View 1 (cartoon, rainbow, N blue to C red):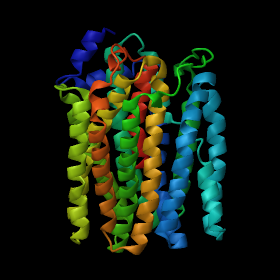
View 2: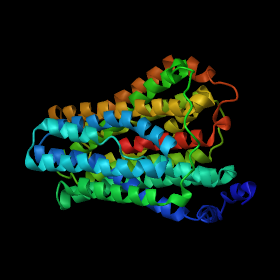
View 3: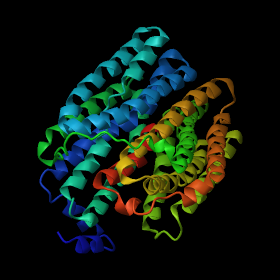
View 4: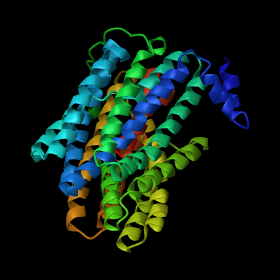
Length: 441
């Protein structure tokens, strides 16, 4: 497959043919469909958990803090699981991690149903920190299959991004539908079943699994946080994570207050849809400025757009107008995150790229957990719609942090170690990082 020919075919009426060529590789269709099943389950869990606890325990505050506990432990578990995958292989880690993760998830459903003390909910959900990252592993398979074809890898990464966005549009809607029409437990049970099945099927596709690169060599270069620009990015990502976490909880509570809880999943899907559209359009634009400057503009745009849901919520707007505001707000997130991950690659040497990506993503996840916890409390003690002040304020804070550290963002990149020099593993980590925010959304 000629790289130039494939890249050229991605433009114009033959774009579908370019994607079909990806699946000419034996086993590509199987691992893609299995991974898609597992990622759909991941996108269902957040809203399903919130609805289950709010319905059975009558507390959005409890639902938000339980969700936060799981996200906090996930921020620790995600890099550890990834390190194990690098060392022992995808299948050897995915199978036991999947089987383990099913136990605390089922335990949480039983604890909620049987009226167990609140602390058991925290313990069970916090223990669900070993879920395999199927999106990242799928990208690693594409990188291995087309390791000598950069154009094909570009098409594959575009496909994975589109699949992620589709999951985070459909997942919340499906989870909400199951929780409100079948039983409050149905969403989480279905997510667990789909996730376990998808993960095991994915692990079974051994012929496309990347070979091990050998035992990792210990790094002797200190933490990537010694780089000033990365410290600025991590703080900015933390505030951006608050945007994601607080938007989800606030939207569910607002729809419930208006007597239309099932619509909350659709509203959250509109946020993902806005991000999907903006991300696809942003990918078509040729960069005309440095990543640091683009990042600052992206955060500023995101902060401005997030005042739209706030105005709709405080103004008592109906769900239709709120949906339009959320769609518009979502258009500001994807370009910001894509540029932010590009900056991580620019700021760090290749030997620290994967570790730096993990640190950046952990900042996002911690922010999501904090945003979910605060939004749950606000939803219980403030009028409907007030919670949309949290994502608007968090985005403004992210902009202030980025402006304060703009010198490190615009002049701190290392020559020869940016995105153009990133390894296949680094590119896979970057793409994986872009969709971990979806998991939190």
